[in-house]
Image 1 (cartoon, rainbow, N blue to C red):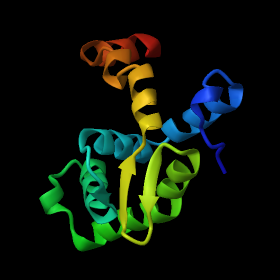
Image 2: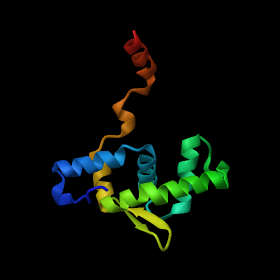
Image 3: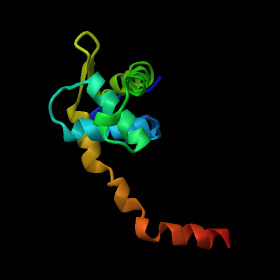
Image 4: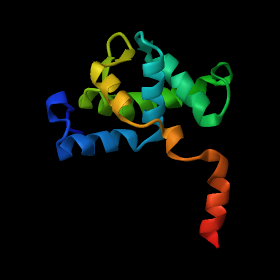
Length: 132
């Protein structure tokens, strides 16, 4: 269970704890990035296909029905309840779609781009130096 995020509690420890829990999982991060990039409501089935493709490093058109179904179940039973409970997405279970909330936009503006946190071009060199 996660704490429902609220703009008036931005600086509370509970707010940060919830943000860290949300961002701790790669599937949730990818789902949030996809929702921010696609401004309209997204069918959960479409989001599942995209996540299955990302996980396997293949185009979404190449995702099998079983792979999409597995991602759909993971979204429906793990990730979307958490994201919805926290208030960063609106998930309409009856319609089967999801969209971001203004709170997610606020978080996206405040958080650094993950690609800027590590210089990928020197990552292997850094790892090798750590092993010595």
